Length: 154
Image (cartoon, rainbow, N blue to C red; front, side, top):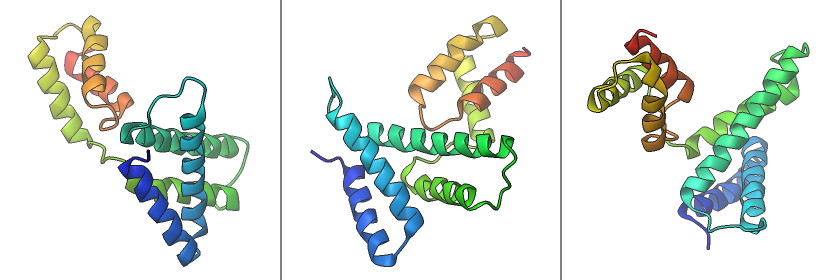
């Protein structure tokens, strides 16, 4: 059974086809393909909206990695494949939950450190784990780690 987000992706696919939106069409088709791969994989479990978000996030991260590799190899920002991949990343952002900005993340880090009584930089991993468990997909892991180290003086 399709999730709410999968249904939304289906509607987006139809809208992209009607509008001739090649960027959206490519992005949504790839995400839907990856959802189907997950659904039909050996030992597959029921797909939830969180799984679809993870798939979208992983695909966007893969696209960014490809862009980084191409640029490291000397490709310029205006090459067609880089422009296409960047456009797909931007297009897919509409399906992802809004990430906390640095100020919101810093406040969250301060709150978690205070609640858990963490003052030793050696316990930074404990704080990172707690935040990532409860706020997965809402905070940037690298930013959380950096802010914890800064607040603990590490």
